[in-house]
View 1 (cartoon, rainbow, N blue to C red):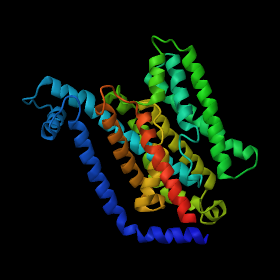
View 2 (view 1 turned 120 degrees about the vertical axis):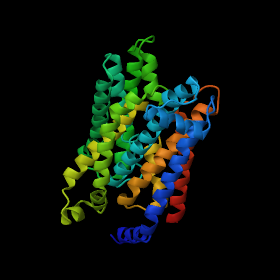
View 3 (view 1 turned 180 degrees about the vertical axis):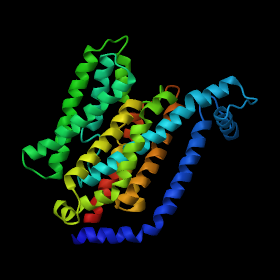
View 4 (view 1 turned 90 degrees about the vertical axis):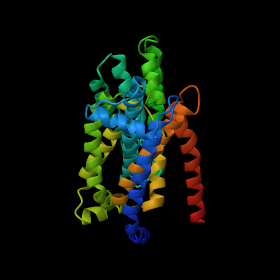
Length: 349
């Protein structure tokens, strides 16, 4: 308890830094969006890009080449919006999971949520269902995966964080086997490419219409979690302390898990499985604003949006062929997380 009170005191000292940091992050996000709009195999100036978007929104005409309008409105703008939305959604989801389970090693990937959502989407593709059902199946798959992961420690009556992580690894491995079987039976001409797309993660085929299809559940879930962030802080004190302060622990956990799973599943529906963001970004945000979730969730959303936007832009510009997002996020995220673990160990010593 003294440790948590000490952590709270540190967070309070950082209170005055909260909004300046968030403002700086928001400005950095806007600059990254402009940069991403301009770079690529067809370079476009910032002024021209912004004028094209402005004229298209208000139905105005301008002296622009049709290819420039097509590149900005049909290719780059949807990718930029999707990267921002998905990066923020996965980061909020990861930070929430880490808060409610009181475990910094937890993420949508380690709990099997991403794998379960990917399997749900793959099953919907296998059945030739519409995008609405793909989203629904992805959500149900993610919810089933996290449900199994959380149930295993309860069955063996263990509250250990290590057991929870191991349960997630077990569920993730099982889901990977099912996913491999789905790929094996999928039609290589009409279905396999789409299923592999979900597995590797990419924004290549994202359209504005597909973004609108998942925007409502992402916004609602994110707002609910932001509104609940204070209660998540209360839960992190422990179940007995939270109940003493008037928290309905079970209801808060169910709502938080439901919204976090919906964020991850919606992201999977839009771009497939993208690893490491939900695990690494919350740690990076904690280094800037502290551990209090009321400050952490907004900062994590901004950092995650910037990170995924930069990764996607690099993935489509650094080579002749576009690199899948999961490859780049793994290359960047894994060493950073190893450094965080090393730094934490040095502090304990």
